[in-house]
Image 1 (cartoon, helix red, strand yellow):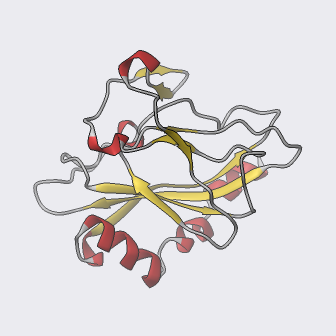
Image 2: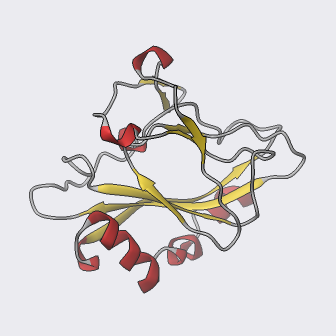
Image 3: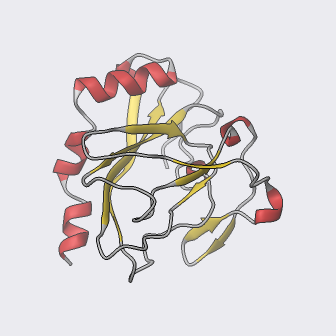
Length: 171
């Protein structure tokens, strides 16, 4: 499908390979940019009629296990359209990156957390718009918001990892 072609395009990966984006990721991870790797570069398309790309509460570290140590990776998202609560911005649990990796249940190739395993007390929404770039820790508990609009939410995304010796392994 056209979507599969777009989401695997080299152009998507190029968005994240600019010096500016790599420098930000290397500062977040406290490593030189030469020690960065990426994985999971894609374009996410979220609609109100197709839930294929909608994820429940999870931590990305369960999908991208390249780093052995906590806080050695981050997610980067570039929205291709303005977004807000109306079209399902990403929701997250504040400060959840400070807890350890939580056991996830796997169903239909998607991991999800059981709500009883963490406190939902401080849910917030990432507000991002076209022209922004959002970085967050691989360990933060988050989920796709529900798109209640008749428009798609489109994001390009990747994961940055530290390839420091003794901390990184190929999958």
